[in-house]
Length: 104
Length: 392
Image (cartoon, rainbow over all chains, first blue to last red; front, side, top):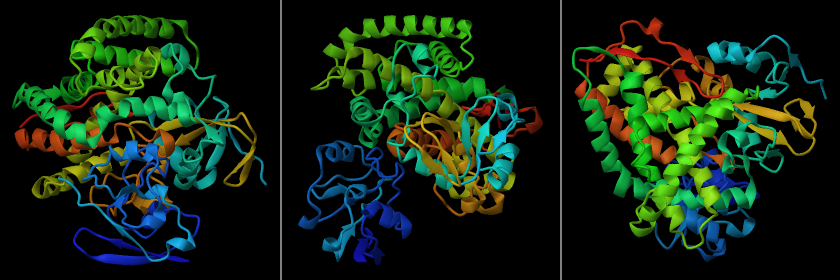
């Protein structure tokens, strides 16, 4: 099991155990993390699993992911990622994932 | 492994009239079943429909035997998988991004909605379906696609002909003649608009595709726009009519929604309750186990999201009811997997954030005196065919 911490825009956080082989979006949905919908199920087609990750262990966004990030609802930053594109491995233990501020 | 059950009794006409009791029974007794009349396999449980859509390598959208190709005179992105699908979809996607909705379509939609709602006569009984739901959906779509020149009537007519052609599983030549005529009119308009979009680019889908750094072939741009016309009018139209019906037939919920401005919740519940697109088709590429059954390759599988949206396993015992205040669970009305609805953001913003509050701000005491007069219809696409409301 790999421990992942989700931090909401208001600073509240929740740490969960993620199953290796899942992705971060699936982990968030399974644990009812607000702000991650993952409507397309990880096909990189909806941008409803947008998050911010400042951790080099996750690598960087692919070209397809960059294009889809343009379609995210909330503010795009250099640390923006689609959480469905980050695979959980034991090497990511302790990863911190920040959730975006919803835009009204 | 058990033998796949066959349903000899159920017909497309039954499913068009009132599918929900049939799906409820299927979920309980035969969640994976071959429908004898169409030979297709219907899947009605939420976990299975979602899984099917999220595994395009096993369940391909590419099906050469559907009438979509003759109807659209093209092999469209709806019937493609993988990189080819992605390239064609992403060519158009920027026009529907949240950013462009904010900068371009939000304000425009508000103006259009104010204009069309403003024309409705206070105190009278009107058919909201024909007088508002259809025309507003047509007008905003014309702008989003870069086809402002097309009238509301043309957009709605083309859309209906494409849908009728795409659903023409009986291969009736008259329906293809009708869709051919629509294709000719659309092609002529698109041809005429190219110079304008090249000299004055904007954020519309046609403009974005034409002016892309690496444009897709013109034939696929045309096919993409036709897909958006075929899918972009009836869905917001039917969703709006369904939500209004749900609210007006549940006055307690209606009052609470107005009081607390819960229009987005009303939107989500309306599209969950009666999914505008009820069914999707996939083709098996290999032998695969669905539920308790082993299904061979080259089978046609229909995922019934209309049923998944009322699955007791997710929504408990009251999934058949319209209830804005139910516990929130994801519905499948926008699909899942690579073909997840490209218009989901647009639909939520335009209907949930703009149209519903605006409509009920102007007519807060709207009533539907005779709900029994509302006719519901559709197997593939479903919604009310009329909505006689009194505006107050």
